[in-house]
Image 1: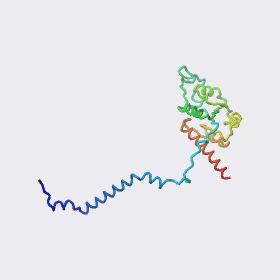
Image 2: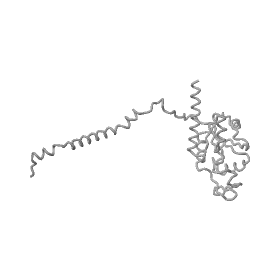
Image 3: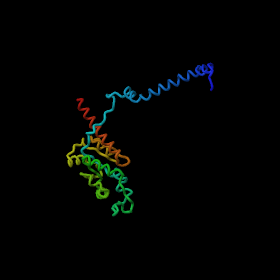
Image 4: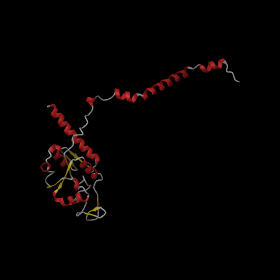
Length: 230
């Protein structure tokens, strides 16, 4: 049996200055870690942005009554008169080809976009150049897009979309329309007519759709805010 001497016990119990300092630091770190566990909720309360400084969220009730689509480089990745050769045909297996046998496909998410809007009871329209009316209508049919569009307008080369024609056909006010176009001149013409428009560079998809709906809602919200200040 080993009996510890009094001097040994005393030596182990006594701390040097460095050891005491390290112990204090360790206790401080443990205390600080315990505080950190509670920081997220406390921090969010103390440093939350005041409500009046937060950006307003667009009202989800603001939805366009009519959405107008361009075709070339919006619904499909080509011009119907460039790099493809009409007439187009659809094989028994559903594959669409041009006269030289090149396979033609729309942008991947177009069908989903059109279906989503139709399910939300938003009326859809499509416009395109009149000199390629037959080719464009053929592709709309072959890609199974035609059934989604209530209004179809073929315009002359010298004009952009005839928004007044869409208004007369649908009875929808210009301010309740939204345009998606692959050409800047189309979106410029639309905005001159006070129609919210989105310039689409890489084809129609769900992300672009959300952008357009968000822009429309913001325009509507801004107009309502202005009218409320008068």
